Image (cartoon, rainbow, N blue to C red; front, top):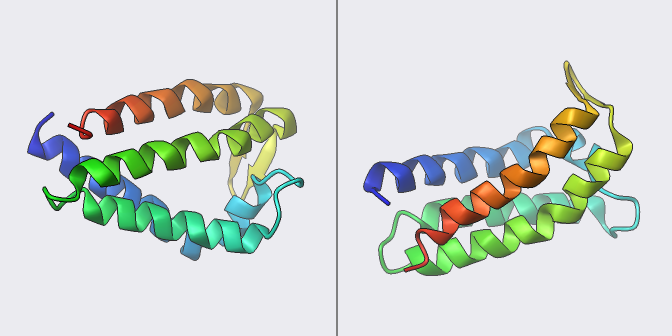
Length: 120
């Protein structure tokens, strides 16, 4: 995959990670009750996304960053499954319908595949 793809991926994760700090309530609503320390997990996820996105930009760290992003995306799957169970979920002006929640599952695998392209 090319440089443009990795830059887009990097920006995607940096912006997504920053959003964990800018809009924490939205993420807290999406977390299953059985997970402990929701606020801590939210901020840890934000930091992981930002760090992963930044490390993608360094050739020496790109593979490690991509594997970390894959692990993070797998770790996020319980929250996406919970979204299906809890839908519809209102997040400000956005409503996560059951259809949107279901679409998120295959999207996770697309994102995993995209990150995998940078593990080599």
